[in-house]
Image (cartoon, rainbow, N blue to C red; front, side, top):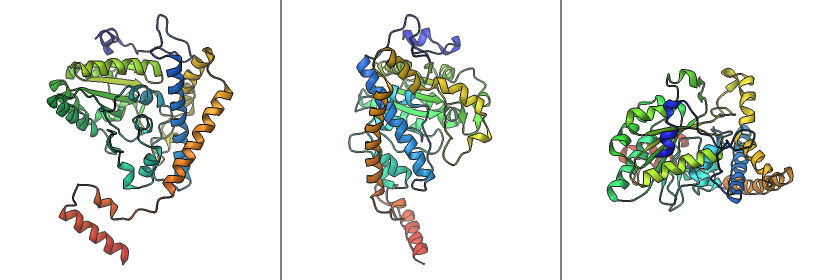
Length: 358
């Protein structure tokens, strides 16, 4: 494939179309129309506002520990928007954007972080697996599903989203090896947000790029500006086309930044300086899109306020609906592990019920 050859990770170049100042790289054309770009900008605004609301709810004691997406919206919107209904995504725990793009209701996502088992249930026909808290285990599931589809002759694509920290886990390498050998239609999307909790990228791996790890497993890899919606869209589109055409898996490294904490249980001031955050602020994916749209006569502060007001109303409704549900029963912890509860689970559930009632 031309793109993966031209931007081979060992060349040390990061693929970019839209520069931080809102202008295009020389000779580059936007892969999206103005209407499509504005639509995805609206999605990104909604996602950021929904993310901010989750942080507020957690700080108010109305939601459990939460992993914010702030700064990584372009990675998720630019990739997930290309997927078809039959495709599958395998999220880690910071994929608010990707799951919303696939059709998971915001209310359902909030319910998950509020401790409801119902929050892990995707609506019928939406192929999104539940949040995966263990770091790096879910790429194996993405590869297994893709291999099964390939055997059945189903031309689907599976996408596993994970952070740079997951690339240090054995499960990630096993998944990459399996995908390379069996040429599964899998996209490994690493959101390199510069930190694995408190561990910075520079001591996470000695590789110059994360994308080059693909070479050892016989698949294409590419490093893309993860704050550039256009670049993420173009690279993912190429990877999807390759996967559907029998060309095998791809590792995409989206270089981005986590502006907030790892989770609400984390204090990032312990391991990073304010100067670092200030450096990344002008690279914010939303600022970049606003500058581009403004140059096209499609953005203004008034337009942003209208979009924001509309989004806040929808978010308010999702919060109200989620908080209207009764507090879940403790037994729900055990009921949905298997289609039918196993004897050990039944025993554990009865023990817990007895403990709570005593």
